[in-house]
Length: 260
Image (cartoon, rainbow, N blue to C red; front, side, top):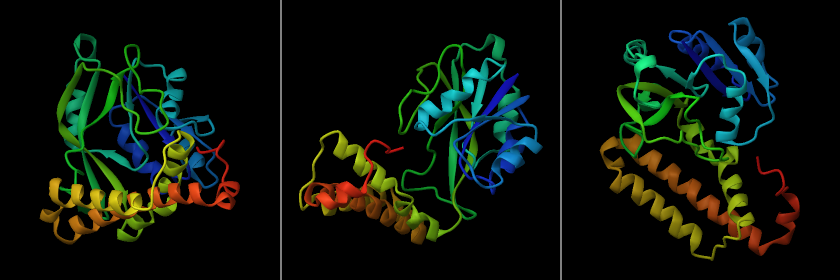
């Protein structure tokens, strides 16, 4: 059988549907929670999930915490705002895990804004490894953009759905959720530096990459909007890095020992 793994922080609006989605193929669900103060934990417990409390350690490290608590060799990891499609469910049920030559399975990911599927800007097929043999591989122990470490992957012809943002407002609030600030802190701590042109140059590059090279122009208004939000986030990242270099009072406002 398969163990489901979800990492959470204040996911009361998502956790029920995510657990129910995993329960279509998993016989246990592990929720690794990093301090939710909403109803996430109560909902998860009601649905039979096992709760593991762990302060957030970063993406890959956090996802690997569940491996100390799973009873099955094969683990299916979803974010709280992701769901299996029926095609993905059917494909997983057909896998003979005992005889599989693969260490992991990837799925295409359909990223959504509201009910709209964003097909361009690099948002699809956005392949992600989510199902893996935990005795042979796991997520890389890194704090950002962790991936399962193996080349023995079977790319399944099925999707998972990622409800990325409920609306365009949330898309532009992404920098406000401190992604850009976190990235700037990491760069500053690593000794990277910006100049006066860096915010503009990186912002423009991000827009051109999304809108032109990743064909955001084919996505109409949503394609332009996603490209613009990427530019804003990139601009803010380097503007904040430059601010750290120029203003010591801003450095004092931030705890560089607690980036995560």
